[in-house]
Length: 319
Ligand code: SF4
Image (cartoon, rainbow, N blue to C red; front, side, top):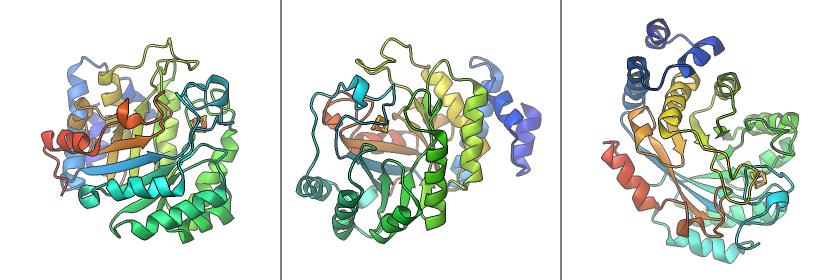
């Protein structure tokens, strides 16, 4: 632990072996606290103690061919209370209701099969009413180089895209396709927002370390870790989730290994991880793959005021 943390102090990139060694830290050991203290120190210093709030609007809940086994919207385990798709007017109305004064980014999320052309139209209309300081982020299915450029032209500044843990076996989406989209995002000059997800008890530290390093290789400035939610009706409904302490450790390791330039997030919002270098949280509106409610703000989703309160309790400033 000490020699790896010394490398962090010296600005030396951590190897996969370092990442795995850190992930193996016993959660009830004194070293656990050394690890989270270092992640916390870096975030406080490198991010000037700034906290970030992102908002995501889930646009549609059409049964999705991505068929991720953990997702409430997947076609084989569809368990959202209703199939629905917000109209452009409804989305604009929703956006108009949000007070963006302390919000940095707005994510628009769709299922993998959503019409690319319709998404561009919605993006352009949303961009037209968004305050200039808010980054618009696409969270959609796979796309090619040409579509990545269209997203940029429509006013998107970033895209959330990842290779999920067990992509291709717990999902119907080939890893290579996911990687081609990551490449398209970077080529178009969009920022890539990344996450190690959805973490379950069966995933090895080796698999998690691979995704932390992949994010670093893509030069990610906005990084996250997400635990898998055992949504009722999905293939993982009876699987016990990882503990909050475990997820806090994984967040700390991702913070040190990926070393994102701007922020570190944990999903869903959790207080404990704010001691371990996490300085960014999401509020959510609309459909959400971890919820069976059509409007997650009435279910699992956190509201803007709630995430602001969490960050402020951890003495991150969010103005
Ligand atoms: S996580 Fe996304 S791609 Fe996978 S089934 Fe759900 S909506 Fe589709």
